[in-house]
Image 1 (spheres, rainbow, N blue to C red):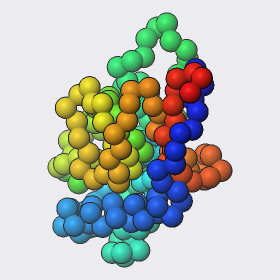
Image 2 (image 1 turned 30 degrees about the horizontal axis):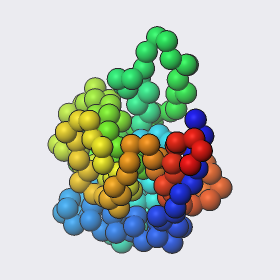
Image 3 (image 1 turned 30 degrees about the vertical axis):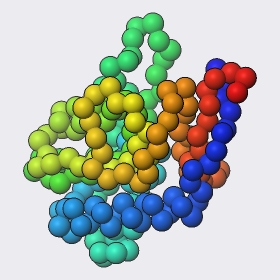
Image 4 (image 1 turned 45 degrees about the vertical axis):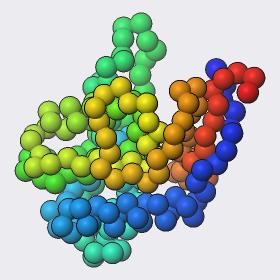
Length: 184
């Protein structure tokens, strides 16, 4: 099924302002940046986490330890009949036990990716807390999960796709709403 772009809801400058705002919210909500650790969910969540961490460093002068997490094998929608999953790298060079963790992803939809990520983190230890930051919350939750830090809430139809593009993977920066219905 092919998707057709309907509208752009964030351009490069808007994304930058939004991520700076999220960085400020994280600092305010976690009593500063000291003792804060960030984990980005592969793929675009890692890029977004790196950017937020760089803004926190700019604002607070603190380097935030950053990990990357692939949740492929924690997903509840993998089956023996599905195609071979593409597995990314998990690199978390710190003990998560008793840490303030900010988990970062690009889009919050059903909540299943966030649940899988929390399961993966809990298998590594017991954090003091896990906060969740997303660039876009599009609704349609299937699990009781919410983000603590949201760049933009975007009501969508289930047939729509929120497409986050970043230079590192897409050669451009934007958040687009696309229609996945054929012929639209």
